[in-house]
Image (cartoon, rainbow, N blue to C red; front, side, top):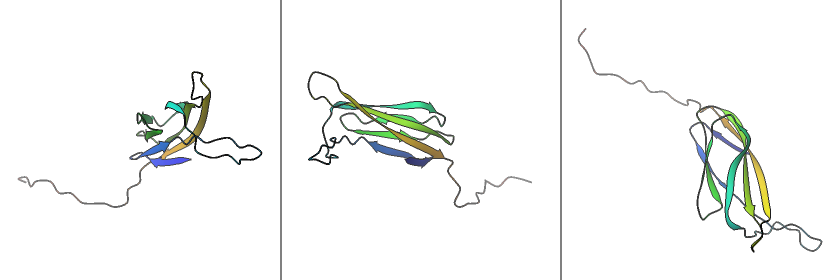
Length: 113
């Protein structure tokens, strides 16, 4: 689960892997065809945005201005030939309010009293 505050962004990376078999436990990195597709699966009550990085398996998830939750969905084509075999994964995301951790006193310019 990705967690960030209203002043942060986080890079998400799709990690396609092989399926397990009786002789192979799976989980070995595997290629996909083209760039993955990134979207929100359902509600996005924090107004987050996604900025995919072309030519990579990565995407910036940028928090919105309000706390909330969403589910990010990534899809890719696992068939490296002419066909399409879509694989997908979802990732829950939580955005919390950024908290103050310190304080400064700022003074303005003097004025006549």
